[in-house]
Length: 253
Image (cartoon, rainbow, N blue to C red; front, side):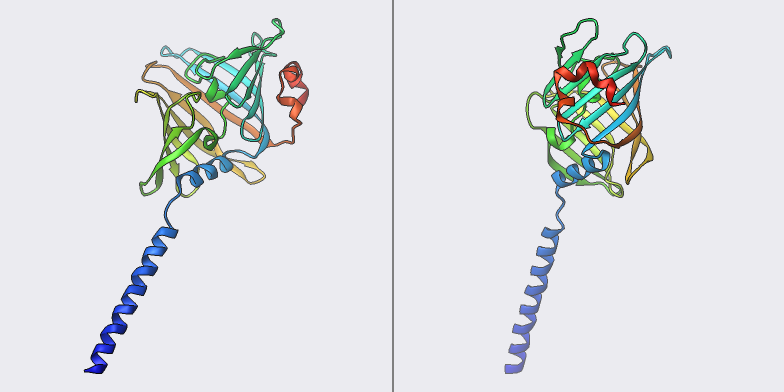
């Protein structure tokens, strides 16, 4: 009798230990959406780098307009883009410092303020797309859903100054790279969809999408494409990210 009672007590204790380990293990493995978002940013670009981009705006009748930009970025919130072509845009440069943006036009001289929702190239990409900061700098992950091969991150803007109030980002589980991002206004209206494609090895351990396409239900029939090339680490002085340096950005190439 005593043996049976002792055996039951030991069995219950073991069961409680197993349940406790299971609970703690699940908690330890709980997904952290903000950490995944920070890893997405680390996978998309080095902390300080240069790159070339071709932007193509495609109209419903098939007509295209192309721009080539040389871009440098340092840290999480400093970025400069210099227009190399077409000839009519050559020498123009844009600067982003946090939420603030400027456009430098050679014949005008003094940089002018621009906003995130404007577009210096027309088309579907706006200035916040062209001068994009790290995602985790502008957004918090409020919810993460395991969808099998992907994570769905529901992101909320940290401030009203951010171009899109909410993003729904599909992240590939194996690569922790974004595949599709739906961008919503504060009203809940879908503004545009961004689609990353064509994973490419840029060297030095950087493997990421080389193409970004977008369309918008607000501009049916129009598409814009951004093609990335020569994305590589580059040490940059702080003075590069100043208004006074905009006329000299071409010297970095």
